[in-house]
Image (cartoon, rainbow, N blue to C red; front, side):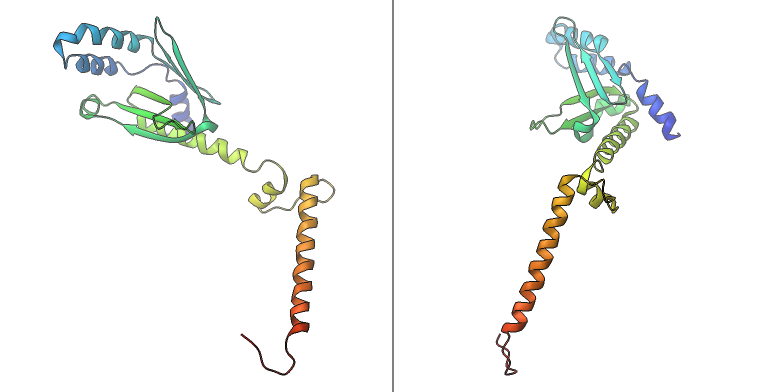
Length: 193
């Protein structure tokens, strides 16, 4: 697939795959006496789960009585993991775990019921890297150092001018110290270690 068509396909994802409901029902059937108690919340979770991929970030919402929504901007994403157990693999599903720098060890968002999980992971990585690369060369001397370009004279910010002055003073001090060491060196030809 072409990257643009991949992105369009990812941006169009709004719901989990129907196999997720099968997975939920199989998971609830593990303990038959508790099946109705476990299956009902999972059934409503599946039917209310919505994803939204935008140019700025991703959101996930679900719930009937207690609505929950998680929104993550691509710039906040720190890491992305894929996870699937034996049953999920049998159904062709995987979960995409999105982690941020929130300090929490658990994933901030878990996208469930995706068949195109690898494409979603790659999409999120490209967006995450794209946002961070655009943010890097923004302004000032750090941008010049990052891109290897000089800041045009007359348009440099005050910080760049101050840093240039400091660099010039450090060069002058280094030259003065080198000259002083040369003058203080013994003239008898013996060098002390």
